[in-house]
Image (cartoon, rainbow, N blue to C red):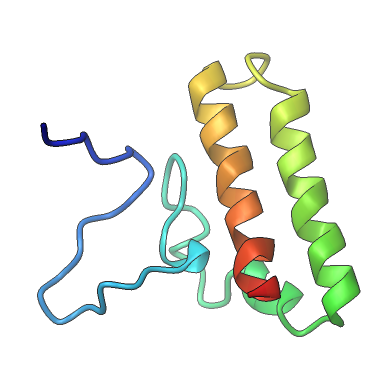
Length: 91
């Protein structure tokens, strides 16, 4: 059975690598992707401990506000997206 692709991923081009990072996608909208420098690009210049703290805080924010701003499923997806970044950093 074919699984439905998550709504927060973007289609891959034929020339694009099959390995996607958290930076390569955005949950809901394109406001960060349209910036010349994304906020995560700046955060990635910080020391490791500070980066991980920032990503954890972002995930907490989305989980805590679940259902109060956007749909609950969208908030959860945003929180998961924030947790993908520190997972990449510690690997």
